[in-house]
Length: 162
Image (cartoon, rainbow, N blue to C red; front, top):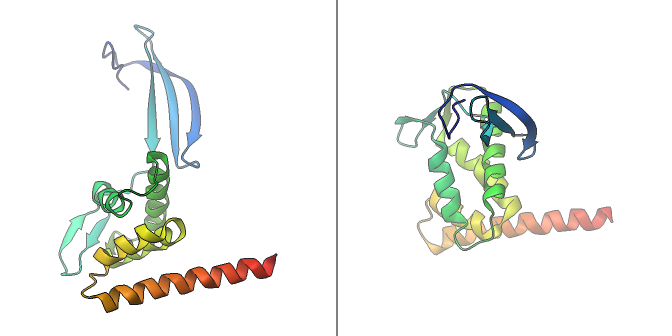
């Protein structure tokens, strides 16, 4: 790792700790030449994953595209950068569990919706409206009814446990 101050190639790790619920490692480093201290972060990277689009075209997986879609869904909604990173990490972990080199965009969308349903109803509906290509109010209403019935079922289950 190059020192950002003097560009010397030799640094030592002073401290390491897990961040983002263990999905990344933050390392505190010190340059062996100028003693400048800086931090780096290592995250799991989804490698060699090809997304198969609805029309059959294929493109490499790009975290930035998923992040942009999720950010749009959470526009003017409460979501910290740390929470977004954790969410992306969980989604990518689920993608890696598929153990496939190619994954349909529909599967990726289903995984994203699974997490959004748990986090924020508005973001879920926003993402679903684009992902499922709502064509009219009836389709939108159907998705909303599905979301609300899921929430009511979960509330009844939690109340029974108490």
